[in-house]
Image (cartoon, rainbow over all chains, first blue to last red):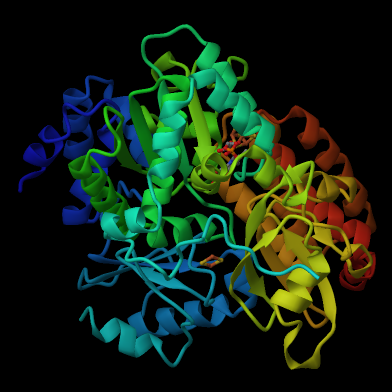
Length: 147
Length: 407
Ligand SMILES: Cc1cc2nc3c(=O)[nH]c(=O)nc-3n(C[C@H](O)[C@H](O)[C@H](O)COP(=O)(O)O)c2cc1C
Ligand code: SF4
Ligand code: FES
């Protein structure tokens, strides 16, 4: 579906701009300028306000990024369980630093706070899917599924 | 000694969460039927008498809150479920929604009848896409069965902002805006979602209601500590043997949580501190472990019950490093609407990072305490007011750790 159709399908939902942004992002990985302008028009708010919404929430990105979004929990329980080693392993495996995307556009690496899977720390999510009890040794196997 | 007691999680593992027939076979939706046979004011009086207090952190009497929305003049009213669950170390609302979603829907429907609402929203954090699917399926089944009558429920997704757990920020977010807290008053029961009377309750609060209506207020009020009766779900993280969850009566002590249910500290190490209620909670030392977990008992030791997260650190942990990480959390999650929090969280994080990196001075600690005092009284919402607590309480109870890094 093209982004205009996606946004239009939420037009009747009061306050539905956040849902619309989620839907677009699941296809494009980020919210390009045209999407924000289109949403502003559909939901009848100034572009600045639509941009304000897009930039407020940490799951939205207004910059292009890799297709598979890897988020590493850095909240205290994951922090003491060794999140820093997981960060190092991911950076090494992908050849990028936190906050960057791979050149082939396949992966984006981001920090997040607690994702509510704290029964088995440290935790990462890829496109919202949680991986529990991760460590440097399990990272390559997890990434292979997305390559 | 306290034993586990499942009220909220009574159907955990016993039913297929995606089969409403299973829930009904366990007696589900009988309470809603009973509620609807009562007058609205009798129902609210019963909930008030049970002394059920909010499980989302603030501990407000549930029935009393409902009576404000019931009394508010308006054709349109809303019931909103707070499923934002952003407090680090917490996943109890997810457990409820994944394992017994109909209990939540029934609790919301009881509230809707009590206050006279026809529309409900569940605001579920964006990090739980699987839960959102389950909720939508559960709603579909409830609609097909006709159990909700004319009460409609819609699920809305958050998008990664801790502050949206604050009820007025959550309302802003449902309205499609930046999730910044509103000035209060007016409070949501008089003017909430789209300016209409709105009840915002936590998932665990709603999930308690079917059992309360079914078994009566007196039954519920007799469980646990009278000032905060019932059970509470706790989720254990950090240095404990059983990193898992428990539902226990509120007279359970912190020590029992860690040693009895949590199985103690791994590898024969010694206990150092526990932070309860999530990342804004106080760090509690050994000497206060015999405190019951109920709301007011926790307040008397300067701690909070909060979400029921229990984060344990053993003697080998660097508590300054942990407190510095937590300060970073608040800097990141501050919404920026008010200056004391926007600036204050950034300064606390900066000073803590300095101390943690070995560049701190003793005068920094006095500065932190002063800043903490200012923030606790001048910040607009609970985020900024509580943000200094982990730093202040670690300075208070673990001064030696700070001294070791400063000298
Ligand atoms: C920064 C902040 C975050 C909060 N996060 C949550 C949350 O994730 N879930 C929740 O139920 N309440 C949260 N609250 C409390 C809500 O504002 C509100 O008190 C609660 O939803 C009321 O429901 P209850 O009476 O059933 O507890 C938060 C409050 C603050 C200040
Ligand atoms: S205290 Fe912090 S989070 Fe709350 S309104 Fe002020 S800036 Fe926003
Ligand atoms: S603390 Fe990392 S998932 Fe909750």
